[in-house]
Picture 1 (tube, rainbow, N blue to C red):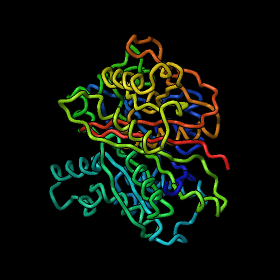
Picture 2 (tube, rainbow, N blue to C red):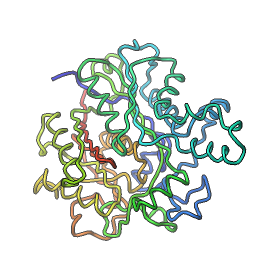
Picture 3 (cartoon, rainbow, N blue to C red):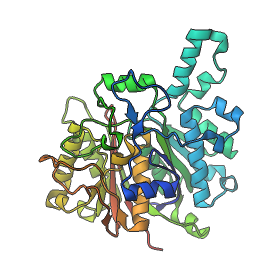
Picture 4 (cartoon, rainbow, N blue to C red):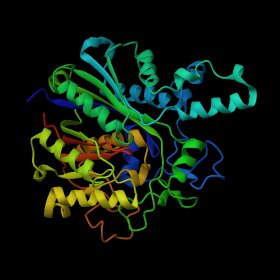
Length: 409
């Protein structure tokens, strides 16, 4: 059966709240974090809104020299780790590095750093390019920055699987603890994709919609008028521990991970096959049937095609019960932060356990006949959640799912 794996610390930097309490308050109130882009002039872009986090101030966490060498995604990650470890009330430097793990997901390179340095190169020449640029822009540098901050050198792993990056990072950490390789892991994901080139590319590919007005209404998972996902940025970090390790130090336990499944998807096959298989594998890993799931945290990026397919998969797996299960999409309030999407879901689920509330899918105003399940529309749902399914689909064919449960000590 393996060891049991619990979550004991949370750090979150989201468009609708920085820190656990602010994030929960926004989720509970149905507050959107999507707004007009302010970090650069978006007037030439078809999509001018995003889940931006202008309130994040790196000066609150780092000195100026450190800020200059760090890409925004790395700033998010280190700040998120600080929050999660503080919440877990643990000093990892007192943990044997061989018993520890850092596994972080990211869906892209540090495009903010790459684009800014490219502009400098074109305008001023090679001698003005930052000496930190190449290293700072590599995805694995994020873990390097975390290690430099912690002064702790455990096992490490970087994961990239588009929107499933964070879910896979946590899934890998869960497996390593479950199998007895480590006792504690820092796991999560970070993404900072809000740059002119990224937004232009997503717009030209048709992945995100043309949008300027009413940004808080733009992300509408499962709604008939949904027209595409809204890009966002952010970071989610959690601390995972073997349950006896957590109990021995008197840690607060938010919940337990009991199942994980991941799979690829072949593009010329049924496009729903990957998510379906990931959910089934997670159920199998957890050793439970679909009847054991109380609530679903949906991938649901507000895409006309993907939301419909996800609804179809839920009906196939859960049968008539699908109409009874509360289904919630946090992306209605955060937009799609790509790699961090799964962490926003996991953190929300841990707080559902704690608060006995399922947060709403906002902007669900016009029912879609092909999306006809109970999506917790616009208002919270009071429920003591015991077991939750979380699923994520990634561009490029990677799909993943986690099953979490309440822990009664």
